[in-house]
Length: 409
Image 1: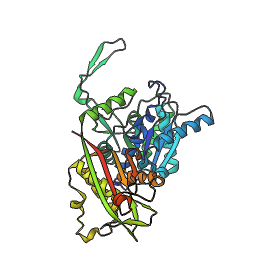
Image 2: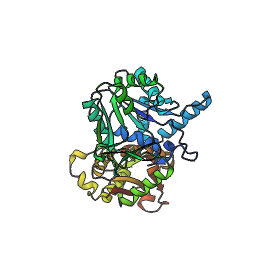
Image 3: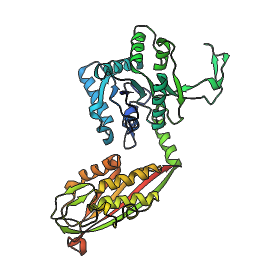
Image 4: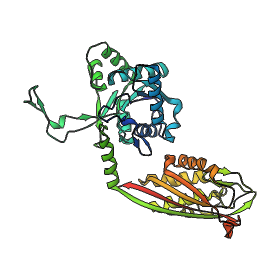
């Protein structure tokens, strides 16, 4: 997450719609990227910029019980992602309105009460999870300069204006047209005032740029480059098709990592960044976390970037007793900088004692936190040596780790 602006930024994610064309499914809550459409949408924004306040709208209801149920369902969908959970203190959930316009105004009024110092506000559709950090940053920079911005795409087909009875009435110049997307970004105070004025009229506006243009004098809305991928989910097939497209264009690589350490007294037993209570721990140049070392080698192997020994030579005293969590973060940053994403990790620990099962979920959560991925993408299991060999005699601990990485061609 970058912090490129000293100004207070607010984010509104609209998820109050009924998803009437989804056959009973709420599109923002559909499973996506190990979380949900809503959590994936929020995660991209939270990684791109630092927001003082995030407001999520959820469907309104006629009874208090139903409102609370809708709120609970929305929170569950959002916090499915462990990364998003880190921002709980900044996130506010409010019921939306009967229209998109009402939902935005409700959210703006809430921001005005909680963070009146807000300078810019981002408004984004919760069912638009394909937005990129690049688009978020482009709209941010343009709004800082011009007061308002929106991503847009020039239409591919020639556009015509038609009459109510279906005849062409005007020939439009395609180069002067744009199909707007979200996020739409505005000066907060000006947009709030514009929305209040719009609320006093009987007209229903289609989006916030229309309200801005209607009520802000000498308004300018800068259009930045949008993306064909930044589409809004209307039908479940939209999400399925997008996933199939990405998988079809992805390069897939498998990595295998292995590590082995002697177990000695007066050393901590570290597995996955978690200290496991034990009479013995790993003997190693760093903290000896054999699981993180094997995972590091698997990631480096799949991405073709080397191995852990070339990154952190044992002969270099700089890495003496180093925290393996930090070593893995350095490696993972390098892997992701080269365009790779994690599909999953599977690891096997060979250790006679102590029992690993009571600690497994903590270890999985720790690894997921280090790599900033969903815990569902990580699995770790343990086997004993059945009293046979070095493992069975409690002399060593071994780990095998495999990973699957993907990269868009």
